Length: 85
Image 1 (cartoon, rainbow, N blue to C red):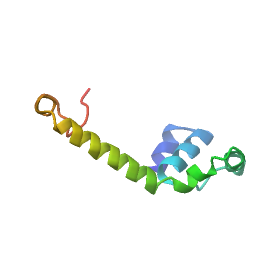
Image 2 (cartoon, one colour):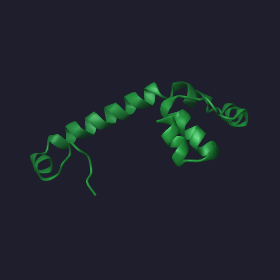
Image 3 (cartoon, rainbow, N blue to C red):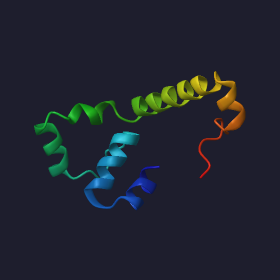
């Protein structure tokens, strides 16, 4: 996942996005890490990865559960498989 993020987002943007989503901070420039510490945002890197995965799982299953409570939505739209554009 980290490599795919870095492929789609180049430079520091990709490195930061990968670190926030997966928790893998390898390859992050020291300048960027120092800027995050100075801004007081270094804790975001510390809690990333597992916590982001847990948050996404909770949001996904909660929204799926809430959408399934409506028979009209559940029967008319494919809520289990996500959006089909």
